[in-house]
Image 1 (cartoon, rainbow, N blue to C red):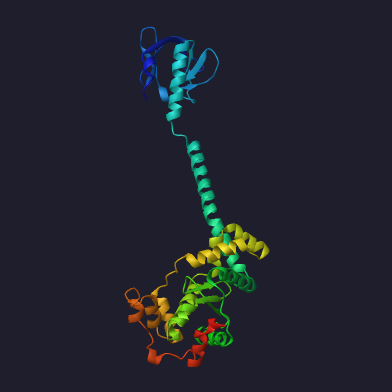
Image 2 (image 1 turned 180 degrees about the horizontal axis):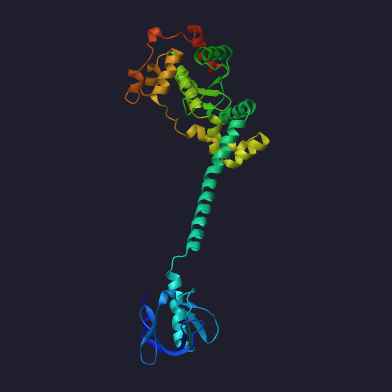
Length: 338
């Protein structure tokens, strides 16, 4: 430890006592770079005190009383203000540089608390949304899905409902999907070929029906949307978009506002379709016993981006299950003529 430059080699008289039973002696006190030297009148050193260890026994009192350490028995009395000031400044500098375990503990504690607060801020909204999704009953999901469908009608046109076409669509769903509770609807016009909603609702653009000569194309889009709904709960997707306040409202009232559904319906119609792993799609086509190639070529007429579906097609058209009769297919193509 280096003393303050302005105080180096500072000297002052003092009274030194070797122990509590010893007589006080007049001494010369010299302040060095790292030690305080106590000498007698013959300049013989009586003691060397390490500056970092020096301890004041009577703060703010005069004469100032110092010891080489809190446990030491020898003491030193000083009246010289300059030397006293020097020792106090040195002590302050030493304390500032000395490691403070308690302070470090406080910093670490505050850091941990801040981390927990931040973690809670990041974790709690997702946890609340996930909890809400898990407890929302099917009836509420169905009601929200129906309301969303109505909001989408403002953007993508009405759902077509010609009698024979609707029956053909129901037949297609029963033959294609394992879950017979899924409701299918055809939109007169839409910016997306297909999409799924809470309440097991799948909406398909009429252009998918009208532009192709085989029901395997619309079947492929329905299978893909059903797979997406199984991969990620559509209610979870909705609440992540709506935010935690909407999740709280749904949890407490069982309802979502029209404004929330309007914003989400607009987002549904403008966002990109979520990709699915080819392995999942091929498995679904194999289970349904329909070919994947018609769907793959509908996505990309060149087949370049859907080559894995084409090359891995699990079912040849000649071996595919018949989804509907020719008359039903014609009725389905005319579902929007009503």
